[in-house]
Length: 119
Image (cartoon, rainbow, N blue to C red; front, side, top):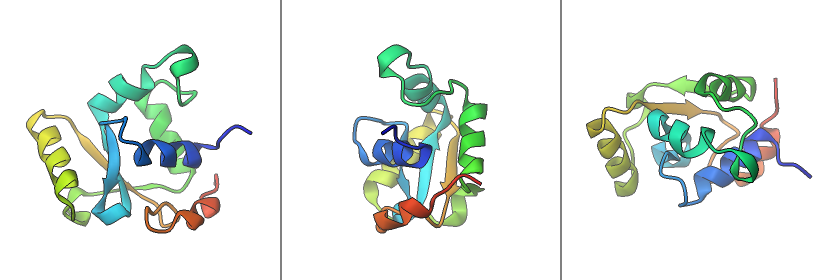
């Protein structure tokens, strides 16, 4: 069966293949390097494409539909060194980092993912 948006997102965040998206706040948030995400994920075509949409606006609309809320950077400074370094690198490249939180999207509680439903 085709994966739903939250499952696709989960698989992406879990894989090291993507540099534009990672777990933040100790696995409670998703951090997205907007510029890199557009280039690395949303601009894919053909069999390589992951999401049906190709604009950031559409992607963020999906995030909102599935109950993700944008949080400010100081929501929690990154706990781990790799997160911190990724955020610092993005900051120095002047890319915007977006942080999204969803109580049912948590690295330490994969079983909650099934509660992540479209509103």
